[in-house]
Length: 383
Image (cartoon, rainbow, N blue to C red; front, side, top):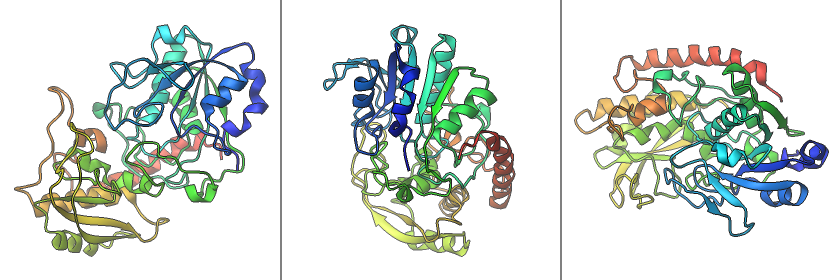
């Protein structure tokens, strides 16, 4: 199997005589572990780097904003795409002709890298610049699709287009869909993988996993990320500050045996909930929850990932815990007045926060929306 960047030599004529910019981070490497930054610097006229969330070197926690700086290793200017603005500026784009992207996505609607790509595509369309995607695998498996379609009233940088949580698409496929379906209209070129199959999990690709962000240390966590990331918007820990973020969920007020029993009684496919006690450390002064407090909850153990329903499982966890502990469970307030709260942004709707539907009705919406999205998605699949 070959990554998009592995195939650069077949496409060098496209870059000839053009000034090149690159959106990347440490995940941007070829199959011989060489940085895409170094490859493009050797083979093209690389003039600018652009940093998504977590930084070009991947050393920043979630939510930490960036300013323009000089990359010490290459002496190339790095422009932020995660600061006051989340898109390349006109001034930055004026320095180049082609903007490329090479990032390892996590396979989830609320992972910001796909919107860094979308915002960059929009900016390039406005400034008549070309856009190139070096494609990479979807680590959460590109053959499994599930979720509710984002309500645009809950639009944000963790959910910008009406797609489902577990979209089952690669970056090249998403770029094609964004460009046509949502009328971006940029001059787009995708350098697609060879030998990639939709059914592959990340270990099947035989490629090196490099953390796309500090809280996704292993590729299997990208599957559970679609389950438990919604707890960001609550007063419960989603396992950040532990060795396995997103696998543990809990809070000091939970009875771990009780919650695990209720969840296991639902007999959700492909998952077992193990009672768990854990103590997160502080990972971020702004976002840490229950740092150094004993949290009681569950360890989400996937027993069969081919039938595991990540989004339904997350909604079930949320539905059960708020009913078990109605006096203790809280939805976090918005960060700023007038904004939607994080739970609405992560779930892509208001009806979960407001408890409008039963769990069975939530599952029905997921089934219906998944089928609707599949029909749109089908037109843009490459593999």
